[in-house]
Length: 74
Image (cartoon, rainbow, N blue to C red; front, side):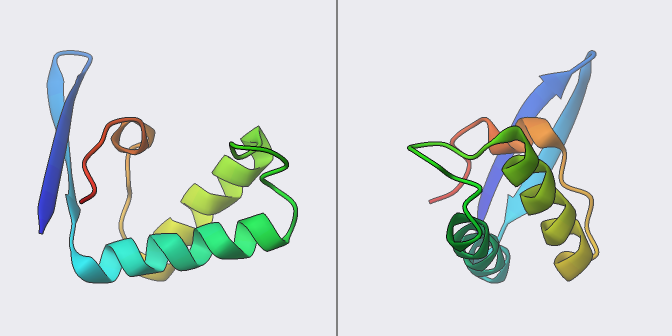
């Protein structure tokens, strides 16, 4: 299991990236790529929004957007 933390407004926000969460994240990424929400080397703003929304729906967890910006996944 990998943990990542970042300080936001003086408060540390942690995300726990276990194997199941990483697999779900990758599956959602693949779906968004196939939908055309990654036209080049990065996701579009709409692609990221859908990715985060679907991740929250599938895992019933709120993942702070800053946890996507740091290298917390193995």
